[in-house]
Length: 186
Figure 1 (cartoon, rainbow, N blue to C red):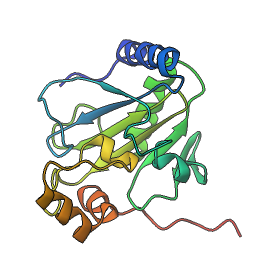
Figure 2 (cartoon, rainbow, N blue to C red):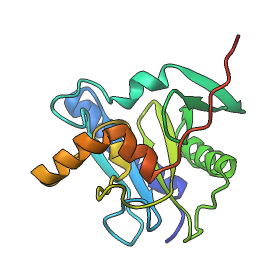
Figure 3 (cartoon, one colour):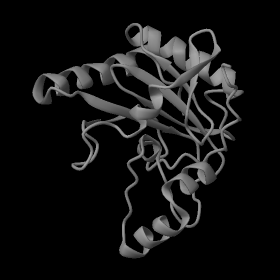
Figure 4 (spheres, helix red, strand yellow):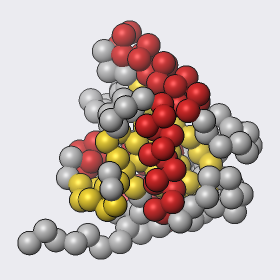
C-alpha cells in the first residue's frame, strides 16, 4: 500500500470544503491502514463522510474529549481517551497534514508502509488523530476508523447486543491499545 501523499490530503480537504459549503458542517475523513485496521478494501483509499456522522449526533462525540488535551512532543497532544492515540490541531493545509501524520506515526513507533502494523487516521478541518490498532476484531465486532469518533455501527441485532455487553469503550480499547496513564498538571 502506498503512503498517503500531500495530494491525497488536499483532495480530501477539497471534499470537506465542498461539504461545508453544502451543509455548513464539513466532513470527516478517515483512512484505515493495515490488516488489523478494519479496512474494507486492500488498497489505499481515503473516505469522507458528511457531518454529523450519525443523525443522533450534533457533533462528533470524540470532539468533547479533544477539548481537554495534554502536550506530548512538539505540537502532538493526547486527549482524555481510553485508547492509545496521538492528536494535533491543524494549522495549515495538506502539507501540514502530511508532516503531522509523519510526526504522529514516529511518536507512536509506527512506519507508514510497514504491513505488520495497523492504524486508523481521522481528520477534519480542525484536527487530526492517529490510533494504533492491535487487532481487527474484538468480541466479534470489527470497528473501523469511524468507530473511534464514538459512533459505532453494527450490522445486526446480535451485534448490537454484543456491543451493549462489551461496551463501546471496551471494543475500542480491545481493538486498539489501552491509553497510558495521564500525568496530572498539579
